Image: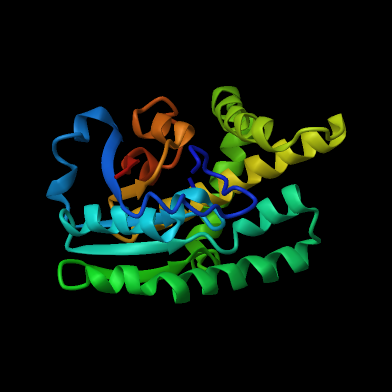
Length: 248
């Protein structure tokens, strides 16, 4: 998940400058816009966590967790472990088995190292952890994934949106590669998004109506705004809250 403003996590986690020890989370956008003043009426949400992403350093995470604790009674922290394998494959050249093993380990390390941030606000909000790898084992995931892959194949507007998001990311992280490798990275990015969106649809079906993420999710926001009516209903009904992190 979704960012140095991207849904795909960056290849290496960044460390914020020492002079910035605190961050304040602010709303950047809400999709659909009609939910801007009503999304806080829901008492539960999920926070998408992208591994090795500069928006998930401890100080920035604390800002997001504090923001959530003031608005929601319960929050599921979705750890993007298994889907991160695709980033490792495409940007680090890892073999699939190695990439999956590394991605799962990074997910475990994140929970272990950052749990204290969530515990600090545990009296206000019940934070629970959920791995993408666990969601991907359920029957609903396979159903949504098949539906989205079919939609991706048949709907040119949706396919163009997904691929454009991938190109925007890789333009920043793919200098000096061949044309064939470029196209392979775009295909891998598209698969990342389709898996990720399938997971989000599962969480919406399970009763999590609001997604919180630090950055923009262009295609997902388009779906929430009704621009891709052929997408699964669960994604069309999802409220996407994008946060901006301001250093203090």
